[in-house]
Amino acid sequence: MWEIALLIIALAFAVLVLYLVFLLKKISAAVDESRQTLKILTSDVNVTLYQTNELLAKANVLVEDVNGKVETIDPLFTAIADLSESVSDLNKQARYFGQKANNAASSAGKAGAAYTIGKVASKLFRKKGD
Image (cartoon, rainbow, N blue to C red):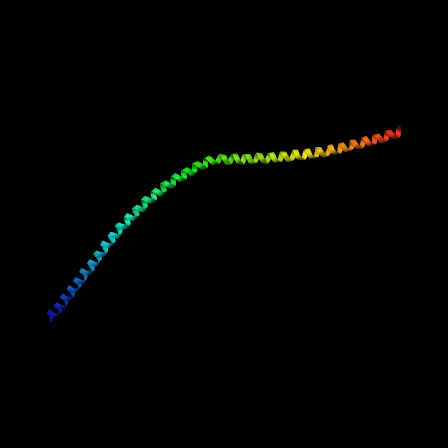
C-alpha cells in the first residue's frame, strides 16, 4: 500500500514539476516580451526627449527674439503716449484760444454796435442843436 501512495506522490510531484516548467517558460516569454517592449519604449522616450529639447531650444530663441523686439517697441509706445498727451494739450490750448477769439469777436461786435449807435446819436444831437 505504501508503494501505491509513493507512486501517487511521485506522479503528483512530476505533474507539479511539469506544470512549474511550463509556467516558468510562459513567465520567461513574458519577461522577454516585456524587455523588448521596454527597449522600444526607452528608444521612443529618448527620441521624444531629444525632440522636446530641440523644441525648447527653438522656443528659447524665439522668446529672446520677441523680448528684444518688445524692448525696441517700448520706447515707441512711450513716444506715442507723449505725443498723444501733447496733442491733447494742443487741443485744450486751441479750444482756449478759440473761446478767447470768440469772446473778442463778440466784444468787438458789441463795441462796433456801440460806436454805430454813438455815431447815430451824435448826428441826431447835432441836428437838434444846429
